[in-house]
Image 1 (cartoon, rainbow, N blue to C red):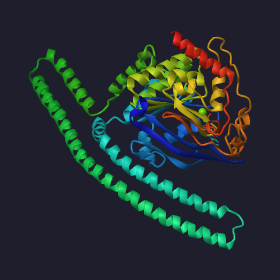
Image 2: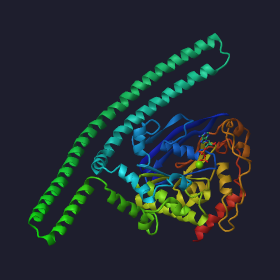
Image 3: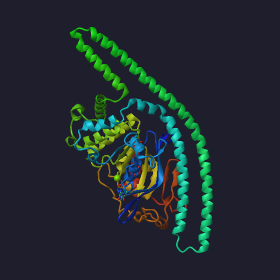
Image 4: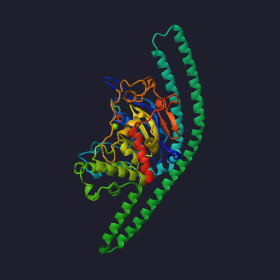
Length: 498
Ligand SMILES: Nc1ncnc2c1ncn2[C@@H]1O[C@H](COP(=O)(O)OP(=O)(O)O)[C@@H](O)[C@H]1O
Ligand SMILES: [Mg+2]
C-alpha cells in the first residue's frame, strides 16, 4: 500500500495569500499533505479553491503578489519554499515536472517541436556530473533532510512566538497591567523558545554530523569512481584512435574512406559516453515522442506547435516533461481544454506513463468524475482548505464532508451523461473568508457551529479524515443526500455482480 512506501514530497501547513487592490486574498489556508512513492494523489475541488496556487508553490512559480505566510514543502532534503533560484532551477522541470491545463501556453509557438523537446536534455548534458550526482544522491538527501527538518521545526516555533507577539500588540485597549502581564508572558515564551532551539539543534546536529561523515566518504568514492570511468573511456578511445590512424597511414585508397568513417564513429561514441550529444538528444526525443503516442515522430520533429491538434500538443507537453526523467509529475487539469474522447486518451496516457516510469503523481481536477480512474488517494479542497482526505474508495463509498457529497452528486451520470445536481450557491469571497466552515452557507446540513468555528479534522480511519462538525460525537446523525447514497449502493451492487 502506498502509505508503507517512502514519502517523496511533504507539504505542511501551507498558507498563501495574495496582495490585491481589494485587500489580502487568502488562497491557500493551512494545507498539508504527503505524496508517497509511486502513488497518484488527486486534488479535487471547484474552480478557485486553491489547487493551482498549491501546485505553483511546489514548482516555485507563484505570481509576484503572492505572500507565503507559513508552511514548508519538503522535497529531497530541501524546503522548496526556501531554496535559492539556482537550486530551484535544477529541481523544477528536472526532478518535478508539471503539465498545465492549456498546452499552448507551455509551448513556444515559433520554435520547432524537436528543438523544444531536446532543449532540456542539452542543458543537463554532462553525463559525468549526472553520474556523480546519482552516486551521492541518497546520502546527500538524508543529510539535507535532517538539516531541513531541524530548520522547519525551529522556524515553526519562532512563527508561533511572532504570532503571539503580534496578537498581543493588536489587542486594543490593553491596560498598563495587561501590557506588563503580556510582556512577562512573552519573556517566558522567548526563554522557552531559546531552550527549544538549543535542544532541537543539539538533537538534529548529532544526527546531521553522522550523516555528513557518511556523505563525505561517499563523495570521495564517487569522485574516484567517476574519474576512473573517465580515464577508462578516454584510454579506450585513444587506443582505438591510435590503431585506426596507424591503419590509415598504411591503407590503400579504397580502405581509407572506411577507416575515416570508423574514426568518426569512435569519436562520436567517445563523446556520447561523456555527454548527451545533439544526435543522442534527437534519438531520445524521438523515442519519447513515440512513448507518448505521437505517430510519425521523425516528420513531426521538425514541425511547429500550430501544426498539431490540441490532444497532440498535450502529448508534446508531456514529452517535454518526461525528457528530464522526473520522479514527480504534477498534472494541473491536463484535460480540461480537450474534448471528451481526447480527454480519455490523455488520461490513459498519463496512467500508463506513471506505471511504466514508476512516477509519483499529483493530479489536479475540478471533476470528481475523472478521479476514480486516476487516484490512489484523494484530497478534496474547498476555499483554500483540504476538507476531506482518503483513499479513493473511502471518498467514493464512504464520503463524510457535505462538500464531498455535493461533488459526488454533481458527477454526470455515466449512462445519461447528464449532470444530476449542480452545487447551489457560489464559493465565498476569499478576501473575507467565512469564520467557520467555509462551505456552511451552501450546506443544507449546516449547524450553528458551522458558521462560527472551523472544524478540525476528525479521523474516520487510519487513512481517512474529514473536517466537518458532522463528525463531532455531539452532532446529530444525518443521512447523506439520497442521490449519493443511491449511487454508492448501485455501484457497490454493480461491482459485486461482476
Ligand atoms: N496572482 C493572483 N493574485 C490574486 N489572486 C490570485 C492570484 N492567483 C490566484 N488567485 C486567487 O487565488 C484563489 C485560488 O486560485 P487557484 O489556485 O488558481 O484556484 P483553482 O483551484 O481553480 O486552481 C482564487 O481565488 C484566485 O482568484
Ligand atoms: Mg487551477
